[in-house]
Each structure stands twice: as C-alpha cells, then as structure tokens.
Amino acid sequence: MLTINLAVLLVAIVIWRIRRPVEPRTRLDQMFGITVILVLGLLLAPTAFGHSVLGAVRQLVEGIAKASH
Image 1 (spheres, rainbow, N blue to C red):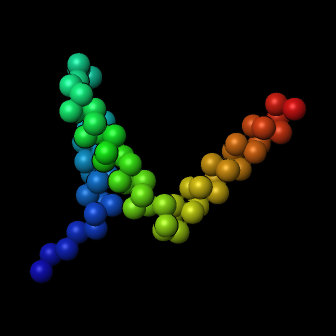
Image 2: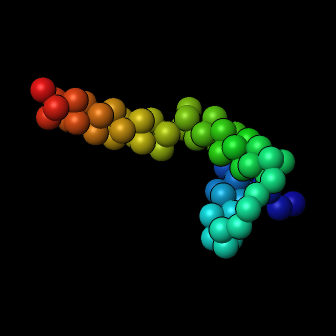
C-alpha cells in the first residue's frame, strides 16, 4: 500500500500554485490558497522542522529589534 505524507502533498500543491502565471484570481481561488497554506503551517508547526523555523524567525526578529534601538 502506498502512503503519502499530507505535508509533502501540500508542499507540492503550494509549489504548483506559485509556479502558475499571475492572472486575476477569483475569491474561491484565493480562499483555497489561504486554506492550503494555513493547513500546511498547522502540520509543520509541531515537527522538529517547524520548531527550527520558528527559532530562526525568532532570532531574526530579535536581531532586527536590537538593531533598531
């Protein structure tokens, strides 16, 4: 039996949607894109990769905040 990780499938969908040519989009198309990105974020957040991305973003924000003072 073939199994596929849902996060991997959503990454493939996101990449496919980003590579499409820019054209006027409907509200339904925009809502689909937002939903896919939110679900992908929820799937990646509790993983080790999600924690490392969060740590990197936190360090970046702290560095920018310190530089602005």
